[in-house]
Length: 234
Image (cartoon, one colour):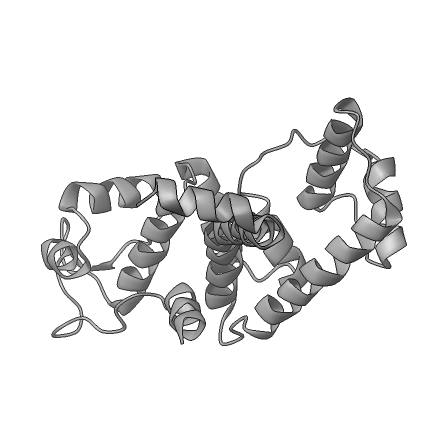
């Protein structure tokens, strides 16, 4: 049940209706929970689309503005700076690219960031992906992340055996399959919201669960130490 609730919250654009339909910007602020000054800043920066003009100085705003504000707040909450948020929103509003390329570009707005290098190759990452039978696309930012991580292993004098790599690949692919199956397909905006926010928010959960699994296995393997620790914590 927790998973379904989280998936719904990631794919939802926030409140689906405004009380009374289109409203003034002050009412938009009150009903969306976003400060008026912040909304005006988003308008100036081009993150929030203009409202429907009602006079030389006035405009009215609708449900699409509430959804856009919810997405901006969520992206900002995930730690994205304004230029990164703008890049994601441009992808949402564009239909020039395939969904595959759009999602890849959206995920690239998440940290850690790498400086793009034309025609850069990643031999370590390529070897790993070919071993796992996965696509090698050097333009996808996670390939650079993997290359950097593998270099870090080498520098630390650590190895990644075929057995360990196969275990990692099989289990991580299982996680990825669940996440892809749950991806909303109703709109590009919902898909990008799920891909970007899901990646940002679920990765810390996966890291924490991995460490807790280590703790649980260690406690089962060394029960005497667990009992000693439990007594100290009483």
